Image (cartoon, rainbow, N blue to C red; front, side, top):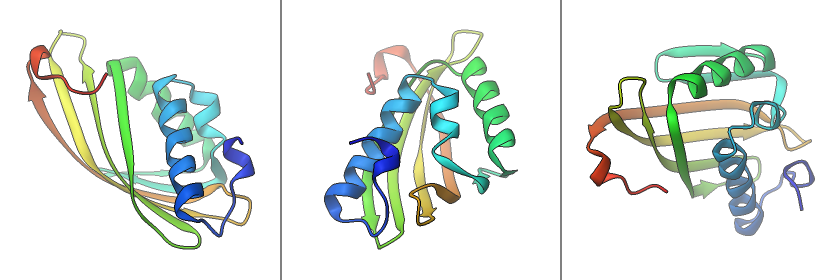
Length: 137
C-alpha cells in the first residue's frame, strides 16, 4: 500500500502506516515525493514560519535539506481521529560547520478525502548535541 491509497477515516493501523510512509520519504530526502503528500493549497506552520501551497512547501524542503546535512528523522504516531493524525518526532542533522543538532516536537496533520494533508502545524525545539549523543540513525 502506498501513501495515496490511505485515506480517511483512519484506523490505528492506517494512521501508523501513513506516518511511516512520511518518515521514509523524508529520510530519502525526496522533495517531490514529500511535496505530493500535501494538497495544492496546504497550509503549514513550521516554528514561526507560515507556508502556503505545494510550491512553497517544495521550496522550504529544498532549502531545509540543503542546510541540514546528514538529516535523519524518526516519527511516531501520537493520536488520530477520522481525518487527523498527530505525531511525535525527533530528527538529527549536522550544519555546514560540522555542529550536530537534535530537533524534537510534534506535528498535527489534517487530511482531505483524498488522503492529502491540508493543514500541518509543527511545534519544534532544537538543541545542540555532540556526535556521540546521536540516537536517530
